[in-house]
Image (cartoon, rainbow, N blue to C red; front, side, top):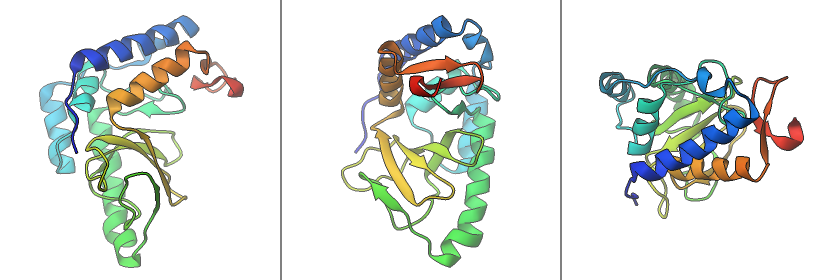
Length: 196
């Protein structure tokens, strides 16, 4: 299943999220890179061998990553180039370890569980420790192409976080507005308020 992309919906959610984050930490917006060009996005898609969902393309066009700052709750936002680099690491592991060893995963939600990592799971952010959120371009029956899922490097659990990247941004914008998220100076990023 695919969902229709509404750029205004994504941009509204992103504006809400960045407004609250900037309110919590004034330099927040300065941590983002300038937007990716169409050529940069298309180059990354060619490297990955899969088109990105339109909401990821739009977010990259607004901000091509965030450097080392955890601008999403516990996550660094990757640039188009970094997405391709991280995907290549997983693709190499897929071919040399996961497939030969017949690893599988433990999905929660409409996520295919017959492999540890799939070539159409595109990592768009990371925590610096080898864990990612991915857009899942090959969901199980009942899922949505472009849904956001967890990818833990040392844990088989895979959870559905949101039906799309747009929905994910809406969730974290809501979380910030209700006080569940804050900027943590010690960790240098956005985290759950109880960790601050």
